[in-house]
Image (cartoon, rainbow, N blue to C red; front, side):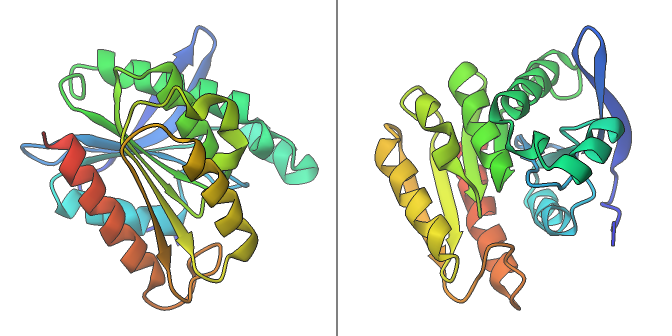
Length: 221
């Protein structure tokens, strides 16, 4: 279900000269910062999990941007081939374009930027953070694949939080590998009883609280 977020409105973000991405933007009064969501593994801006997290961010006074990193045509191709969701360079470039737009846009240009990445979107977020070290103030990965951005991790400057499900065994090891390669302020949190999608009762909320607190700490400075 695509639950609407209070105050959000639809926009299109130009990420290069011939491509625009669909997005939903919500900016509360006196916003402390903005969190851009990086979806992965076949998801998009309608992800109910990320929308739940986004509502918690808004309640904490943070603006939110939920953007589909693939066009409708690309999503259709990816649904068949499953290739674009693993194209970390592509996801990273799209997030760099979104970051640049956020800095130029009059409504968001003064807000510190955080990136919240899920699955392969987390790798794209870390690539963008490495390429825009002065723009990205914080990164959170939830059930992410930061190991797929290993070549970029030593250039990430933003404080980074890795959140992993306690029953997501292969991904725990992948996150530990990435965590060891990060050279910034960092933390890794394991949510007991959660699998990869945090579908178990209460687990997504626990992850969202940790993400909210991380972004509030670093975006409100």
